[in-house]
Every structure is written in structure tokens, then in C-alpha cells.
Image (cartoon, rainbow, N blue to C red; front, top):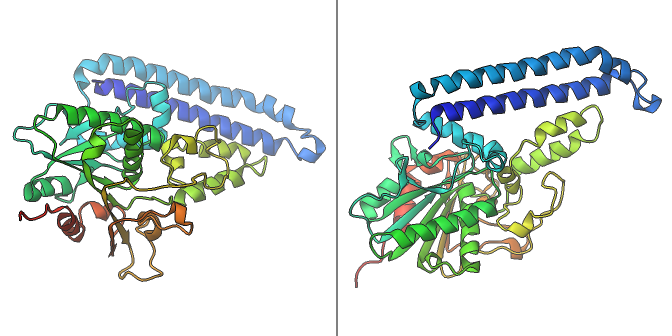
Length: 390
């Protein structure tokens, strides 16, 4: 397990690289603006580069020196800092993975989150004693952590375990990687968990928030393609505020990214827009399959690549959406991040529409309120209640 010093060293390294990246961007803009009109062949560009070179070189030198110095200091503090941990640190690492997790994974960074299951922040296995055959898997959203299921004194998993007899576990994954990649890893991890479960698994339920719903759908596709046995045990699937039809904020980010590239003066800023992770760009249309992103420039302003989507077959699927409006009306907005239609899988094209068994829209709630609202929990309890014995 990486120590806190390991994680701090990696954070310093990222900060230095970010400083260098921004410096390069500013330097390019300086050259573009100071070089004069392009139509005249940018007559002053050579002079501007010559004059400004020492200043930018100095900034880069200082950044590298600071990074090297802190790296040495943190190495000496390693025994003092000890092991990493804590909810605040966990949240920061999760957010960082959401933004640049694909890069962290490629570098095998100590900050890259590995896919696995936890309870109360503790890695599984081992499992608690007296586990049930009714297994509830919680799947968090983008830039979030499995610890985020506990919010304002409530935890859907703990409450459902207490009232309905489930044993809950929470998936932890790197939300900066492609949704389909996380789906493959989720499918593999869940198979290992079910195989190692100390009692026969009689019922498997997935409860997912936000991006977690896309990752869960991708996991089902992966399991079906490889005939993983846990897929036949899945009975219910519930999504909370999942952008099944994409997230407008990412589409807007992609549009801004395109507009930045129009002018040579703003073009250097386009590099900063490319900091968005693969997971974030998948949210533009709610991609869940490898073929939807492979061989495609994910920053290009392309049309929706999906041709057909569906929910897991032979599974009772539920969807909950929220609106910040006080009442649910045909003109109600979404929860601040995900529109109602997207959360309920509604699309103008029938082949891109999801048919949930049941759905519900809650008024006066934000995207995160779905994690702790009493009304939402009541609906979950009703939907997941086992049938009465005959």
C-alpha cells in the first residue's frame, strides 16, 4: 500500500507538470499575440521568442527545482507520515482520479485507484461475519469515492442491510478511465467476489449513482460476452441520477474545446481543455462500449457514436431522477448535472431509449441529494423489498 509520502510525492510531481504545462500555454499565447498579424507572416515572432525565452526558462527551472527539493524532503519524512488514509484524503484522491485518472493509470502512479471492493473504507476481503446470500453492490459516480455513500448521517447500503437483510459492499474504481474499461474490471472483480462469498449468493443487486450506472451497464455487457456466472444472479439494478443519454456539461465542454481551436490566439488554451479524462469525455453521450470510443478522437466535435443500447436482460431495472425544481412538470430541469430525460433513459431515437421497469422523479433535490434523501431511500426500500412468503 502506498504511504502518504508516496502520494504526496506524486501530487507534487503532478503540480510541477501542471505548472510547466500552463507556462508552455502562456508562452505559446505570448508568441502568437506578440508576433504580429499572421497575414503579414508574424514579423515580430522571432524577436518576441528571443526576448521572452529567459523569463519562461526561469519559471520552468524554478518549478523543476522546487519539485526535486520537495521530493527529497518527503522521502525523509516517509517514516513520520506513515500510511495514507482518512476520508478527506480519500475524497481528494478520488477527485484527482476523476480528472486525470487515465493518465495516472498509464503511469502506474501510486495515486491511481485500483478496482476493488470496500466496506467503510476497508478492503474486501476479509468480509464481516454473518454475511447474507443477498448481496447489494454500491457503485459510486465520477470523481467520487465509495466513502461518499455515507452522507449527512445516512447510508443507503447500511439502511438496506439493516431493514432488508442485504450484505452491502461498495465498488471503488478509477473514474478517469474509460467507462467500458472500468466495466471490464468491475465484471472481473465481482466474479472473484461472488466466487469467494462464504455462503451461496441467492440474490445480487446493483445500486449505482451517476457514472456508476454506466459502469454497471458496461460490466453487464462484459460479463455477458464472457459468460461470467454472476450475471445470472443479478436480479435488480437501480440507477440514481445516471446520465444514460449523456451529460450536457461535457457536451458544452467539448464545444468550448472546439471553439478554442478556431483562433491561433486561443488555440494554446485548447491544450488545457484536453486535461479532461477519458471517463469525463465518455459522459458526453453516455458511452458504455469499447467500440464507441476506440479509434476516435475523443476531443473532436463528433456525433453520438451509439447505435443501440439496452438494459441488462432478465433483470428488474429501476431509475430515479431528480430535479432542483420544487415541482415535477414537463419543463422541469434536472438535478444540476443530469437532465431528467437522461437519468430516465429517454431519447428521441427508439433504439437509444432505455425501458426501465419502474422510474420516479423527485423534486427539490440536487445530484448529490439522491445519496441521502429519505424519500429516495423509501422508494429503494419499496422496490428492493423481497416478495412475501406464500
